[in-house]
Image (cartoon, rainbow, N blue to C red; front, side):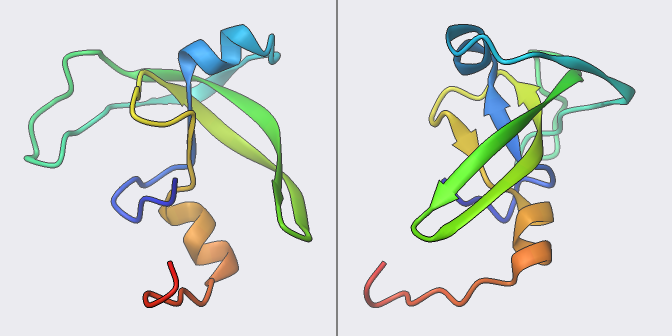
Length: 93
């Protein structure tokens, strides 16, 4: 899922556990703020992982923070969008 409102690319904690992805501790934990600017009740993000992403012919290893998001396994956040500046065709999805 691409989410420009998500500052960091993130991966669901349950996905990390299920795939047995090695976890590293963040040097600076990230406070999670909801869309309505309230603090998220699930707390701070404290861990990160390196994951391999394959999108068509595009392949890369990227760093994702581990969070309790439940609506998707991975969110490609604003950091990823800035790096790649993809052209999105809104008519074709």
